[in-house]
Image 1 (cartoon, rainbow, N blue to C red):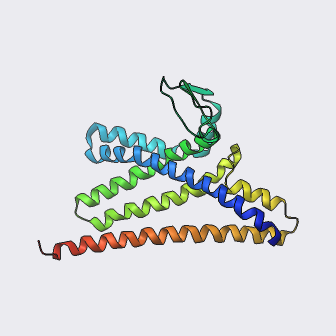
Image 2: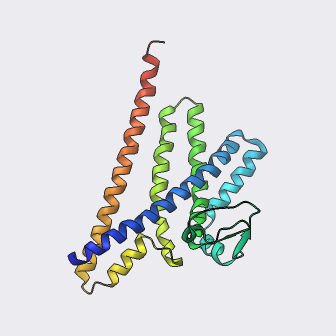
Image 3: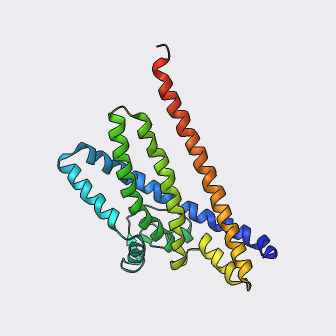
Length: 226
């Protein structure tokens, strides 16, 4: 197994960057859609009811099914208009002044963004309510919720391997298949798990330190001279 690591690790980290890119895009999409929905739900009345119904629908949408729907049920290309678009062809497909092509990478992002939208809306609504009530510490938990959502997106992006996205799961599975001994396969899986734990714990610790710093500043603010 050790002789495989010099080839495996560079390929793994390159593929892991794809997972992180998918997760970042999905969470960003969730923020863009989820925050306005949370504001509508906070406002109440018919906008709140409509936003709540939409969030309930997004919350129940099976991500894996949505991904295959985007890839197989939608037209291969969609007319966008006379504006020139640019982007890496392996991510966004054939981009031009008139059409846009669905790709596996984009299908994974969009399917995860639907779940992220519901997650952000639910957590942002709670944070807005706590902020309005003066519980700033409780509202800051929204920040930690985003970190947890990002972790979920990174792990969930692994199902992109089913539609041909070269990410950490697909690279790991290929490497495992190349090892004849069960012990070597288990050792490689342990290495991958250790990498994930180290990265996730580092990110979580950094964000938690930021949360505690902001909370300490807000708690100390009333005691500062005006």
